[in-house]
Length: 367
Image (cartoon, rainbow, N blue to C red; front, side):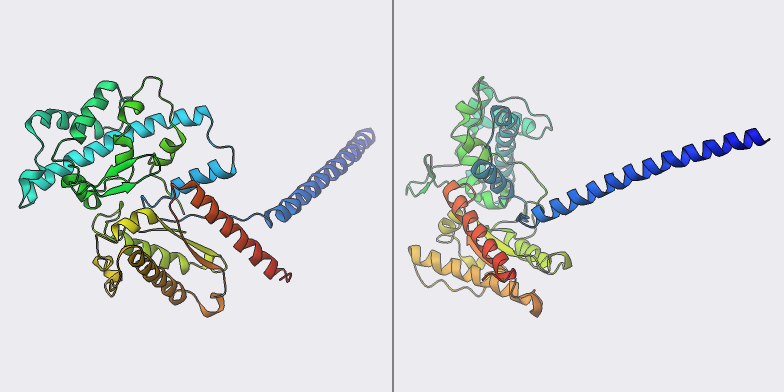
């Protein structure tokens, strides 16, 4: 019994010795973890995090792509190639929207004949509509590209305006159109339509590799987070019964009232200004219920600025109405942006950076 007890006592001592070593090692590991957490916390304090919020088709993904191009390494060849299927899908989905939209308008409009696709293009239209509705789209071939271009040029889809009013893009001139394409705000026709349709042959090349502009125009549905768009006469991508600007107003108002954002600075991007400045001269701003009290008083560039200032004031009023008195001093800035304009995006983010740096210095008592 004694010897056994002694052996057991020896075992207990040996185990306790090992436990002490284990405890010391665990304590050292815990201390190292704490040191790293503290170090990372200090680093985090110097990092400005930007959360982009916006409705579908407001430009969130385009802003992210511009950030990658401007402040990171851009897109390598593998990343560019990964957009081929996305771009081809955009083309098929767009031509389907136009084809199906023309059929709907032909059935429901009083002047329906101008929306009827020509007999020689009806079979092509049905074929492309079927392809556009698939989940797995085929690669864009020269033959399919030619058929898409043929349907795109059909008088029921779009006819070049005889007045030759044009929209200036960095790469080309595109004329304003009538018929189905002109009703794009009702049909959810994406902004990338003219660009991709005018580049079909290049996009269908067997050795095609997307360019930077192709990637910027590629439309991918995302869930994201503040960017506000100017499509005041268009319905939401998520809800065709709701005006986009009303949806944007509600989203912004909701975000402002969230407790998790009560100390957060807000940078409001009034995006797609290039579209706004052309549209506001043709479509009255007061077609949107939120802007029903707007009164156009000027013309040309002066009217554009007048309309922009009105919209800006509306969001400023919404901000102060939805912000508690003790939080009205948090940073709130409004910027007009065009997500596809790299120079403007760079300038905007430089201003955002300067604003946040000054805020940090102020809070630290250095200003």
